[in-house]
Length: 333
Ligand code: SAM
Ligand code: SF4
Image (tube, rainbow, N blue to C red; front, top):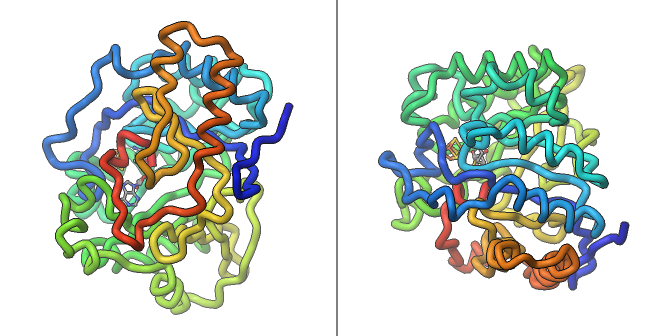
């Protein structure tokens, strides 16, 4: 195995794979109510194509995979994909990001198929608000899914919470308490001005009012006690982790907007329609689908992956107003 690193000496070992652009929810900051124009079945990569990319990437040192979307659990046959990727030599960490709606039904089979762990997105612990924020979801399904994921050993189960001022920021302490009382691992994420983010509000200026920086979140969490810095077993991503004294669970912070974490970026992204994206917030992409469909060899795929790594920008340009033309659900977050 060779270790990949980009032009800024950042080691690259992580691939996020969007397996579908479809979703069973319509979160207010991610999708418009009517949904997004969807790629056809032919346009999205088949499971065999995704595996071919992973087989080419693993010998280059890409040993950590995250399956995301859209909602990965709505893709037909998803368990087969998990099984196929878990068997690829060199894959050491295989994880999933899900909205949790279907997790109760799938958790045990995901574990049996070879999935290691799961992150669940959950922005509210109040049923009515959860329904409003997701437009379609029932909170009890997600809570049951989280418990089932823990029970079957998809650990650590991490909860991703996007904080939106005036919408769910009054629940910061409720989520923080869960790390003390129920051992949850909660990560607070800054709202990104993306695609339909808050139905375009961000692009019209209102997004700034909805945005809360990690700095402010940390200040507000101090009400519950002093947060001590800690490390987690899977902590090579952008989050910084802390713990309240005596708590089993952890509090993590992800600040893509206020303090970009690009200096430690270790990732590439594969979109559902087969484009390799060197950076979440940069629309330069490499078309792997075209290469796969004309029968590119593993060697050629490897060269394209190396090209994507070489094209990774030093940092994103959000603060200078750069925006992606893609939606979060198409790239996978
Ligand atoms: N459907 C799955 C889910 O919700 O976990 C996976 C895909 S979703 C696009 C991945 C992550 O992106 C979720 O944690 C979601 O909260 C986050 N996300 C989506 N839009 C966002 C935005 N505008 N700002 C910050 N995070 C966002
Ligand atoms: Fe679907 Fe996830 Fe986007 Fe919510 S954040 S609409 S669950 S893809």
